[in-house]
Every structure is written in structure tokens, then in C-alpha cells.
Length: 190
Ligand code: AMP
Image 1 (tube, rainbow, N blue to C red):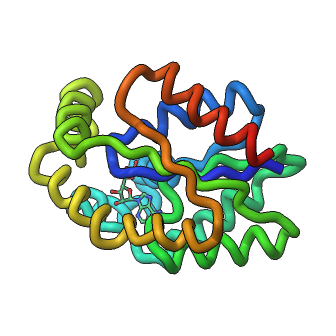
Image 2: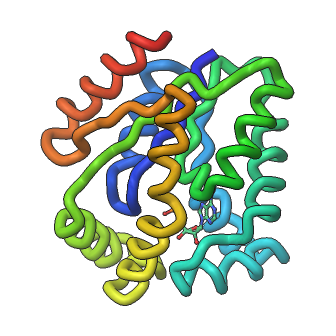
């Protein structure tokens, strides 16, 4: 079972690398951001709650997010493993994930920490906003999201170091080189 937390600031390339990993390892992929955007698109009650937080660049409350993750995870039958993309984003979420996986006799195999310089993140997200029209990819909201990343999410780096799961990946450069580094880290842990 290959359970990978793909971690990094907004714009660090988690989604792109996740797609490549799904193709190579045949694992499932949960992007909590994609789950929430689909709920918003379908105008569900969850979508209505999530929209306010996302537009403000804030995190959805932990309890809600943990319930969503548990129900997506329950839907994966006979899975080879899961790429967790955009989850956990807080220590409470990381603890909940650990508990959830332990309850299934599993654990996080490794956490890949994609590190990208701040000015590059900003450029990438602004470009993505222009190309996709994603509502939270505008300069003001990006700044808020980066602040939330540094204050609420980055502490997970030390948390996963203590768990012995953290693996640093240089996330700036050629896509293939980054993917190669990721695969090398996975092969060592498998
Ligand atoms: P993403 O596509 O991963 O950048 O997520 C977009 C937005 O969805 C974030 O800025 C948060 O508002 C919300 N979100 C996604 N994942 C989570 C999470 N694990 N916890 C709380 N909020 C989340």
C-alpha cells in the first residue's frame, strides 16, 4: 500500500505531480481542493459553506474537512494506495489522517515536501488564474493563502519529520527532474 502525502505551498506543483504518480503507480488520488470545487459547482450545501472560505483564502474548518476526507477514502475499494493532495493542511488534520489510516491497518508511506521559492509561486498562481479563471488565483487571495500556508500548514513539516516520514523535494526546475526525484524517494521507501 502506497500512501503518499504530497505537500507544499499553493502553486508548488502538487496537482501536476499527483497526476504523474497516479499514472505510474495506479493509486487513487484525493485533491481536497478539487472535491470542494466540485461541490461548489454543483451548488451543494457543503459547496455553499466552502465557497466563503475559499474566496477568502481561508481553510475550511478541520471537522468538516476530516469528515469529507473520510467519506472519499471509504469510497476507495481494493485500492493500491492513495495520493493525498492538499490534505492535511493542519496538525489536527494530520493526526486525524494518521488515526484513519491506522484504523485500516495502514500508514502514510512518506510525505513529499515540494519546496518552491515564493516569487515563483506567486508568478505560477497568477498565470494559472489568468488561464483557468480560478476564483482564488488573484493577487490579493494568493497572498492570504500563502500566509495561511506559512502559519497553519508549514508546521506540518516538523510534524512529519518527527514521524520519520518527511522527504524534501526541490520543486523548482524541470518537471521531469522533479518527478524523477519524487520516484526515487518513493522507491527507497516502498
Ligand atoms: P487547493 O486546490 O488545494 O489549493 O485548495 C483550494 C482551497 O480549498 C484552499 O485555499 C482552502 O480554502 C480549501 N481547502 C482545500 N483543502 C483543504 C484542507 N485540507 N483543509 C482546509 N481547507 C482546504
